Amino acid sequence: MLRILPLIFVALLFTTPACAPQKQFYWGSYEDSLFARQQHAGAGGETEAATMLISTFNEAQAATNMKVGPGIHADYGYLLFKQGKPDEAIAELQKEAALFPESKQLMDTMISRIQGRKDKEKKPAP
Image (cartoon, rainbow, N blue to C red):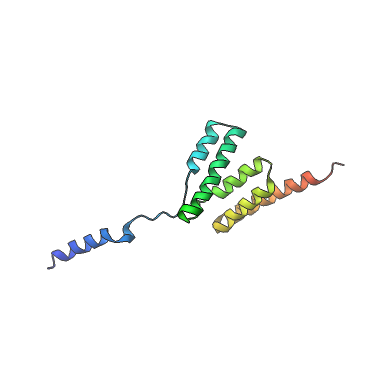
C-alpha cells in the first residue's frame, strides 16, 4: 500500500484542473500589430496596427472576457496621439493605469505631457 500511495498522488497531481496553465491575459493580434508597424513604417503601418489593436480589444471582451495584456492600451494610446487624437490617447492611457496600477506613474507622466502639448497648441501665438 505504501508503494502505491506516491503513484496515486502523482496521478492526482497531473489530472487536477489546477495543473492546466491558465492564461492571465489576452494578447490577440498584438504581435501582428507590432510586425505591421515594422513592415509598413509610417502612417499606413500605424493605421493597420491600430485596427488590429481594436480587434484585440473586441475579441478579449467578447470571446474571452479577459483583460488585454499589459501595455496594449498604452501602445494604442500612443498610436492615437501620433494620429493627432490626444483626447482619445489620454483615455487609453487612463485605461492602462486602471487595469495595471503599477503603470500609473508612467501613464500619468505621459498624460501630463500630452495635456501640456494640447494646452500649448491651444494658446494663440503672441
